[in-house]
Length: 356
Ligand code: GLY
Ligand code: MN
Ligand code: MN
Image (cartoon, rainbow, N blue to C red; front, side, top):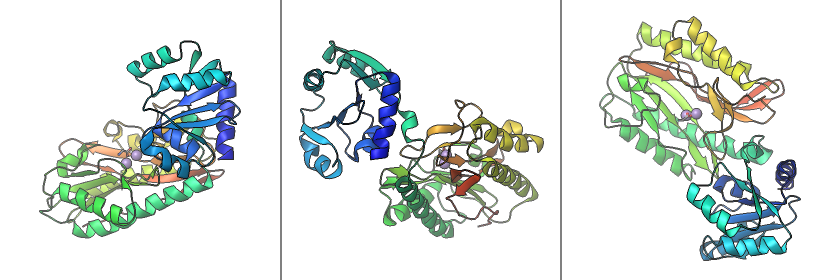
């Protein structure tokens, strides 16, 4: 946690605040270890004053998990009580997470903290550089997901429902240790595979379908996020052409990932490949995104993302796709750790075209 406190401290000092209030679940868990769904952090800019306010439901859990924090029992959402303590600690300028709070919650904060100056702060960059323990957990989340995919592809055949594939996948992940699915599993077959986010439906899988499966395991607070596309039955020349174009673009994107490179330029490498192959108009989304406690977090890896230089131990996805309405689509997604001279690929599931 020391390193995490140093990071927070430097953000707070740059913002010139005396302390910060934190409510965002991932910021709270990252800094305290507390995994409960409610609680407020009040922390000074040196990270020596560290209080975690939780209600009756979470006192014991907080004591067990947030061992470096002073646990204070509070009535649910009792900002007034926190303001009194902040006042007696001598805080005047207090930060709050402006990318999380609702309009109503901000009104409540303004009321309770009327005697303070409230300063909007974003903590998105706090978790960009993963530490060894985070990388280990995400690796396990990837292993859980890939072992489940290995089992489920044996069940995919003509006449099986997309929805049943998703249910099986989730069950295998849960049995392998996942706390949950990282997000609603995408199983999109046939013409539905042209929907980049086609959630598993009641459609039956047919011969000659592309089937795109995009899923991940949520494990100890972190996510994996993987996509593979298969062909049911024999792949046609068109299937192979589209698939191989995405695969080459994906490999080129992965090769372009390294510390010191502009995120948008990695997107460009993969996009240029797809465009040169004549499929540019069918690749409409960004190349990838940061991955961690949230499925989508900083840094983005998209032409449309805020410009960012990739740094060692950022974890990002690389996931180009081609989606042709009326025909189908392909996406291939890996999770990679940015390194000095390239990247470490966490996902290892076969990327060659598999006919099921
Ligand atoms: N399914 C969301 C993503 O891959 O980003
Ligand atoms: Mn995905
Ligand atoms: Mn993704």
